[in-house]
Image (cartoon, rainbow, N blue to C red):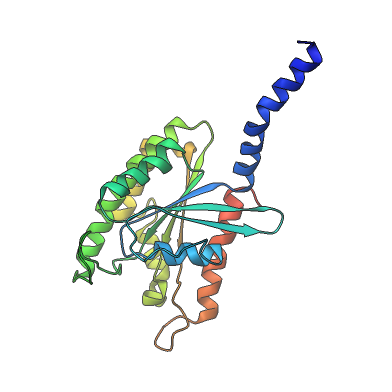
Length: 247
């Protein structure tokens, strides 16, 4: 084989890897995590504009995929991890944090206002107090945060995390207080757990934001207008673009 042929062979062999790198840079993969009922699917649908393909049932026990496409051939590939504590959820967590590690994480919480659902295999709603939901949020966070930390220490470049507080229309007058509850350094039950994640991952390896969002604003009974709801979603989308180097 001549030197020119060998050089061509190497370039062709490297082409899929280069293409994959370009796609990854232009369309980073984002895990959407959180307990069931917090609104992961609705949030991802708002961010992506419209669901891709078949719309999965809210509360799906399988990992959902969405893509956000914007101008300049850029966007995001979302991986919505099931919130149910089922084998499918554990498999999805392995995929996004180990098998094909994501570039960033949206961890969704709801200030104790998650829609209560029955355990896997049963239909219908369930009753749960706000205090019980807040406890479940902490339990869910413990599982996810350890996987985030494990991924962060393995990665050469820093990763980012946005804690998204959904259902903000239900506590529109308390947004600052609620955001503080989920923020590192706040001294709250959740804030202390976020501080633990920072310690495990290393502060330089993980950036953390906390942003409120409403996907239901504008209803006549809502305390938040449709315009304000759209502004919060747009602010989250803008932050994702900044974190991913799209802006």
